[in-house]
Image (spheres, rainbow, N blue to C red):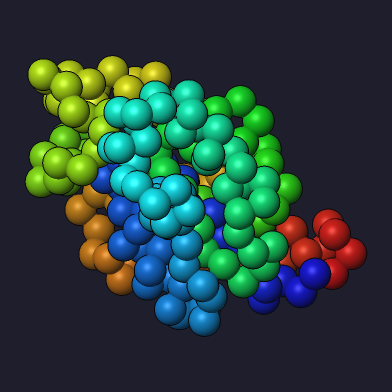
Length: 182
């Protein structure tokens, strides 16, 4: 595999900028951008919230696993992964087998601020969304920190974050391709 074709997977908690950063990185690389949540919604013909309500979170997590294992191109894609995707056992390893994994990270305060503007997140459809975020954040943060190279997005201009992601991708894609005989 050529280093210039290696997939990039953006992981991290909700509100860390995966979709926004992913869109700009994909444009710069000339790659296809895939948002795992949007891809699942299109495949299922319903929203993530509807999937959660009708089938439950475990069913949604199964759809995420299927997407990772067979639902996207093997190269030249930037994949913005849903916040809970890499929390599932084995999925961070599976992403690392398929490309470069970068974890976007933001402080709890930033996440609370960014997610307070959106009502489409089924995990926040609870009485106290801020408390739910604090609980999820605490539980997931160690997983994110071990998933891939961590890049902070707090208080940084978007262009700076995008440039940092591209530098990490270029370096790690070269290593990835070399390890696979490319």
